[in-house]
Image (cartoon, rainbow, N blue to C red; front, side, top):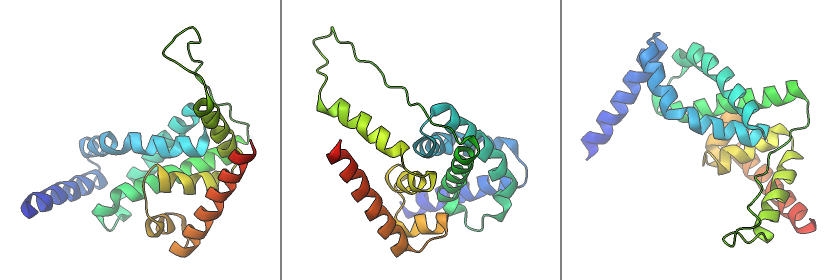
Length: 182
């Protein structure tokens, strides 16, 4: 079993090294493995699917150019998530526009769907998230979408682990308060 894990890591390290050396096929394997995760992070920050895809598309060339600077291939996923989060924050800052989130309309005539508090809560949460700064959305995305711990988030955003925990605590309290008042 341990040998299998070592081989898996060696393959990943080899793929990273090949991509850093300019191998487009190796990069395609990395893109296939991590693109969707990066898009989810970017979506939470941008609040718009098209903007999120634009951010991820901008992140990939940057990641490929800087891949050789990645010292630990095991840290590829957190590093890529950070690149995507940074690109998403920059895109939101450049756009400086109010993001409209599409809300699917339920089939009111269907007996299967009972509109209720859950739908309203999701709408309220989406509105509360839009009111947050892109940096705060990035923090929440890295924690709750990418499942990073405080240390990993701190490395990605240049904060201490305790600073991350403190900011997350305040953000979650703020969101709870806004949702209770809604």
